[in-house]
Amino acid sequence: MVSKELVAASTRPLVLSVLARGESYGYAIIQQVRELSGGELEWSEGMLYPVLHRLERDKLILASWKVSESGRKRKYYRLSASGTRAMHSEQQQWLAVHNALTSLWGTKLCLT
Amino acid sequence: MFDLESAIDQWRKDLQATSALSTDATQELESHIRETTDRLRGKDITDQEAFMIAKMRLGQPDQLATEFEKVNARPIWRNRLAWVIAGYLGGSAISGLIHGASSFSAAAVTIGDLPAASSGVVAVLVKMACWIGLFGYLIRRGHRWIEQPKPIALISAVAVAWMLGLALNWGGTIFQAHFLPVARIGDSMFWQMIGGMVVQFCVFIACIILLLRYDRNCQAKSV
Image (cartoon, rainbow over all chains, first blue to last red; front, top):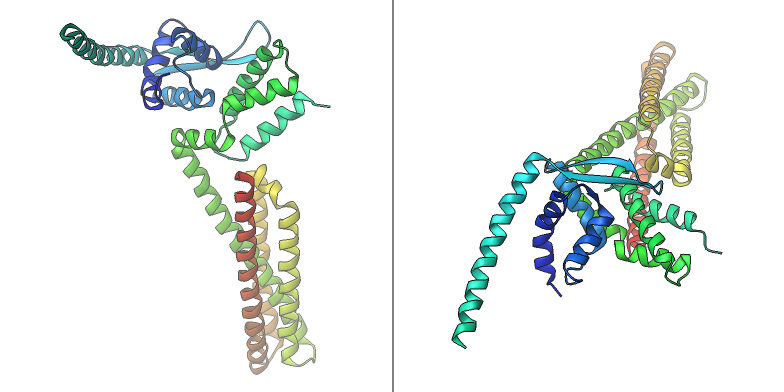
């Protein structure tokens, strides 16, 4: 299970990356992240919404209310142009961390 | 018998009581809780159990409010500042109106041949009756003004109270200046001031008690 701190740090890049695949809404974003992480990333559901609202306030994502096929009103989010740039910047940073860690662990594995 | 709609209504009220959430955010969270409840329903559990699980997964209203407060910090402070200003203006207007009513009645009494001290007694009685009536109203109905603020009604009430308070104050003073000898006005004012001070002190104590009671209620609610 991923630690609380890492869950908090990765929420923003995860939300931006999910929305980079197409517009979505709160419940679906949570389900998608749960599935992609194989259940390792467990979000406290209500905590996603303040993050979405902060991203919306910072104009990284755009929101609109729509009625689904089942007749339920849902607030859909999609990436804005600045959101796409923010997502690429996050991607570079996370890949840098990822590369550093994998090369360290790779070296360690060779030594043992 | 469990009724999902009234359970959601109650949940929404608890959430709105935190005042940190906009209508938009409340609707969004409601949509989420309904969706989770619907998906859980088909899994051999009752509606009540499905709703309880959905509610638990979403998180406690006060925790959600704390998180939303960080996002909406500026509008929330603006809202609180508006309440402080409304409280100051409303308080001054009501206080002025009650003072006006009391001065006017005291002045009316002084015109008769009654002793000057009687104007003090009348001033105290009128003030006390007004404040008790006001506190009684606020304790029973005050929550309506806070839960569903009606800015236009509030501004109109404050404006009317200001004007009426001023009219009564001036009316009382003009009344006395016209019909009474200066020495008698002095005696009357002396007793009105002493009575006024006693009542203002009682009002201050009553406000402190009300605030402490409100604070205790809030803490009990959040436990």
